[in-house]
Length: 201
Image (tube, rainbow, N blue to C red; front, side, top):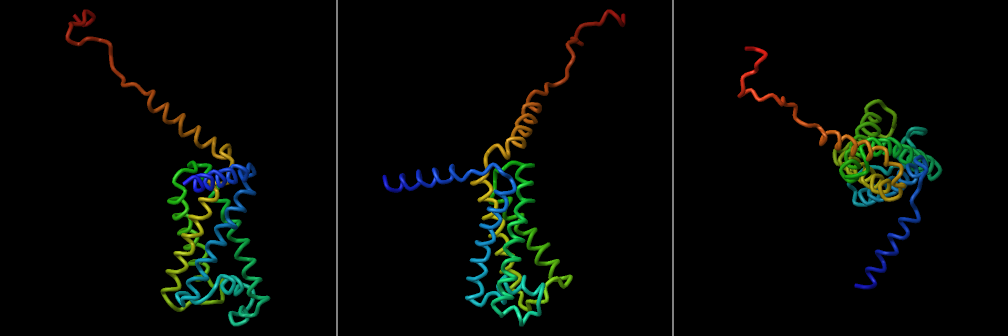
């Protein structure tokens, strides 16, 4: 038990040491971590034959024909594109956190991941951004799951590695609004209508 407590203490120390004040830097780091988690999930699906392509194949098909993405140089071209895209997409999620606060990161991250799946993957497939065309429904479901993993991991990383001051403005606005709501008093008259008003006699 003591060793477990020491481990948790060590992890908390690392987390405090990794607090980042720069909003762009923490967004890029969080997005990169989310993309790596997404790639790990995608690789497991691919090895289990539950999806038809890796992200290096899909993103690489922006530049070359699908059969050429099996070449190492073209696959890594797609993989680099995929990593840059994932890191960049974390910035809108950071803006959402600054607007609403960094509480409930799992819920917000899952929602954000679903939105990225619909926009980047769904619309990209619909308008021919990628020349690689999945033919099985299970591939689309696997991509949805992967994007949710991306969103959750990115959101958790943002919450863990961001300096609290990055979200202090949103939290202070919420608290001020709460105080204003609590400060509202019911409007009533001090006049006792049970007594006759001499002004109307």
